[in-house]
Every structure is written in C-alpha cells, then in structure tokens.
Length: 295
Image 1 (spheres, rainbow, N blue to C red):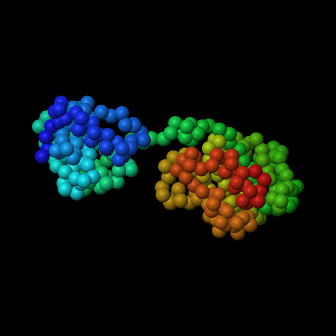
Image 2: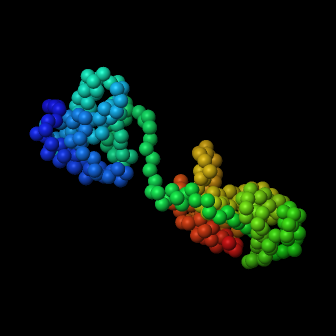
Image 3: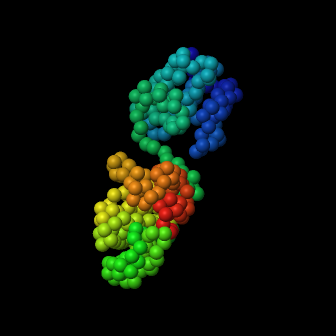
C-alpha cells in the first residue's frame, strides 16, 4: 500500500534514505540529502520510498526512489512511480523529472522501460584533472629525418624555414628543431612533410601541444602515412572515424622506424582526457624512445 509519510514516519524515512545511500553512493553530491525535508514523501509499507520536490508549476523532481532488496521484483518501485505520477497530476503539473547515477544500471533499465528520456546531463570532473586538461603549457617538438646526410637536411630545412635551424645527427636520424616550429605545430608538420619530399624517405614530426597532448606525424616520401594525437578530441568533437584515425598504427610505425610494435601499442595509447594518460612530457619521451629518436 502506498501512502504519504507523516511526522511519525521520520525514523523510517531516514533509514530508507540511508540504505539507498549505502547501496548507491553518490560521488558527486555525497550523502547529506535528507529525505524528510522533501515536499512529498511516499512510502510503500516499510520497504520502499519515493521523495519528490516541486521545481516549477509544471515540473516535479523525483529525488529518491528506493526499494529494499527483499521486496524487489514485486512491482513496488513501479507502484511508487505510479503514485508519484498521480500526485504530480493532482497538483496540476505536467512533468516528473529525475536524476540518476550512471552507475545505477538497474534503475536506468527501469526508467528506460517506462519511457523516461534524457533532457539534461550533469557532467563532473575532478578540479585538478580539469586544471591539467585546460592548462596552456608549452608547445614544442622536432622533426626527425631518417638519413645521415646532415648537411642536406640543414640546407633544405633552412630554405623552408628561412632561418638556420638546430640540426644534429642521432642514431640514424637527423633531428631538426627551431623556435618557429616550436611555436606552431602546423609548421612542424609542414616541415616534416617537405623534408620527406626532399629526402625521399621517412620523416617523423613529434611534439607536445599546450603541455597537454602529444602528436606525431609519420611521412614516407612525402605521404602522411600515420598520424597520432594522444587525446583525439582535445580540440573538439570529431566524427568517430576521424577520432579513430588519430590512434597509432603500430604496424606502420614498426615498418618505418624499426620500433617494436608491441611497445608502440603499449605507449601510444589514446584517451578522452589528458588526465587518463601519463603527463605529456613523459609520454613524449616514451614515444621518442620507442621510435629510436632523441626527444
């Protein structure tokens, strides 16, 4: 039997609310909600509770719905929802809204079955992770040409950049960096592409952007054969295919650089946020080591 809670039910109401909080912890708001303070509380004997608040003349919020485990599977939750809907209608309102934790799979199934639809989303992120994600840190990188002809690379890079870059030979690669390419990742990529044309071989651009993400582009005879960005949607939402394409192709990397494909897959991971990966500097150094170039 569904009935409104009275002052005599406060102990039961608080007990049911506390059981819900223990079973479905709310990592966002915590457990300081007091069901006894809601505008309306409905009880199903001593096994279930629905707590509602009027938000506007048109809409009420179902803030709590809970049924004790022993009484589940008997339609108690559905009856509480029916009573809540009848109360809302009796008050002249049209809509019953609710909030649900993504972790509460059973409740999501119930509400989906009844026809509830998503109207708003509440997103959360630890403040420290957000600060890291939006930090405007350093942007830098280098181009690595797979050749031992240092002088040719230096001449070609100088013509393209219209300045004298820093050039050094390291383990079968010629490393090129400049202030101009450090300041602009697009120029770094363009330099790598042109040097791949002029050298007729494999060229890698590898760098950090905004202190948050790592990008590489791998060219072979001027063709961009693999591109990687550690957080594919860092600069904005992408079509699924475009986001997938920004993952590393371990087979191609291994063929052109001699890297161990297993290590490429282990290191060149992608994620939805910089917070889900090693710090950008660390990831940059790991990728350089896997590909056999100097960071």
